[in-house]
Length: 190
Image (cartoon, rainbow, N blue to C red; front, top):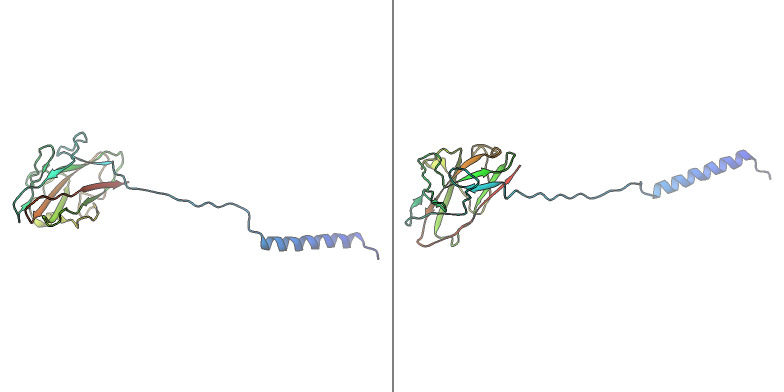
């Protein structure tokens, strides 16, 4: 039996086609993949709590509420001796100062009071330095320990401008005699 060149050529092509079909069905496509991860945290340094004049040079680390049981205290005093006056513009207990070069959204949290039975409630008002007066409609109640996003419904806007200032007004309803502490937290994002 004689095998001619055409038969040999067709046999080689047939073997090649069968081999490619078998291997392509069982081998994965070539290439590489990689998992991506990103960790993004809020900015804890761009927004400073500062004195009534809004200067970032005068950081406010604490304020005090004082009064008798049952009183609503609207005149806390910050560590620099500035007393909040809800009837006078630019006399909040402190200002929120954006030290960033970009507009930032702000989140505030009034922590729970310890012990919790001294304070009945805490409220805030954030403004463009205008006074809130004592009218209840001008104040927003905190859910203590829960972050509040400042936006146009409870602040001058959704973001504070680069190097801008907003006045932070606070009031508490006192309950029982004694002392209590809470932490006030401010974070921000682009």
